[in-house]
Length: 392
Image 1 (tube, rainbow, N blue to C red):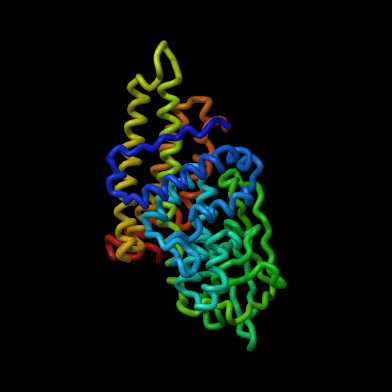
Image 2: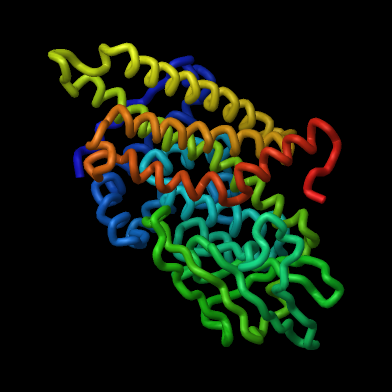
């Protein structure tokens, strides 16, 4: 792979809004990505596997639950710090960011927010370092955009629960040590359960044949009469609002991460436009290429401003689910369009792994539909502004 030559692009001087701590966090994550991930990402993407040997390094740079309090092994950082780390990871690859955001927002977050003190002490410190990896089980074969219809269920057997069902499209599942699984009790109420690898009847088949997120391990969660200790139930919140709160945190991270993918594509296209000579001059000197590049940096800048403000609102617990949906939808759509335009600027070279463009494009085709599809997030905004529910 070519050297990682990425240079930051800050058209509206967003750095003036960041603290020195934010900048240090960004520099630490960026340097780690350039040293540890950029040289190997194409190899692992082609192999279709996640480079598990980098997990300890991800823990060291705070990529796992950076906002989790220090008493539970986290760094106690703010929401903007979390977003910055997600942006730097996805600047490399969406699969890398997915591994991190699942661990942070879909595993550590629910244990921190909804778990018992014993659960927090048992799991969070090991999850923060990467000694333990988790996954999140909500989506089912027949229930994606409508998670309330889930079939996975558990029954009270006196001294334990008995869990049955299946989840699919689960990032990290093939190698996860634990799964935070959402299932219905006998009254139909949704609860979170911590399922540990090794429990009899619990299997995690790997999903093969992906053309997207290939450097992220994806699989299923299958539960065949799995005995769950009662102390593994998340006690502090039930109902669909519990997993949706986790998704809010993850979607927020995606909104930042997608900017990283867009910046990677823009950076590569800008550099290529200055180096590629046609008709005796760099193609960046032609009006059509300048139009593409000018529109790219404009859309990136708009997304940066939107997401930074969202981070400020998250810091004071004022960000709404609808605001998060708007940012996730806008930013991923923006990044995907920029990837496609960047491919045009690169010409035929844009389809090769000498440049990151096609890899980002394929990844973003997943990101635009996972954790709420492009259309579902549009309807969330529509319901928020009209007060009318289009889902039923």
